[in-house]
Length: 229
Image (cartoon, rainbow, N blue to C red; front, side, top):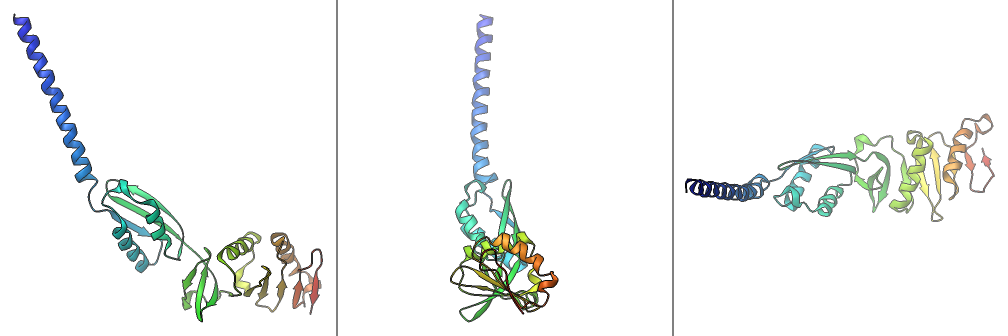
């Protein structure tokens, strides 16, 4: 009899403990969802000018839910990329409610007139509002080219190590080829194919004594160099 009562008592204790764990788990889950991860999200943005950082913070808050797990990645990414200074960015979630955003800023590559207004062309191929103090040495771009064409060309320029500080202007033609005008007056007429190979060779020609007085080096015909003084 005593053993039965003891067994019954242990059974009730087990049930009480089980109910306690279950209720506590439910309450903790509710607390976890409603309190811990429902605070207003905090965005920390770095990499852009202060004014742009602050604007982006506000914009991200306006499009975000209050839950760090429910961010719309497409909206989030598109909002950041709306700023034409953005080259790329990295996001780190710091739980429970903070998001750190590190932005790599596009470099200034050149200047161009569009719709009678002067813009900067960033290394991302996007147009940036003109900044007089930061663009004195930048070359001008002329011609009606698309972003894709610019990025392809600038990629070649970077790979061959051509310094844009020595260039006064770039010219794009409907045939999808480029000319480069240097500050010393030399004009390079480039072909629309094999640009990487041609530019690598022409950089050596610039320092060749045979081309010292050349004003034009025409490379449009394959395997031929036409030089005019």
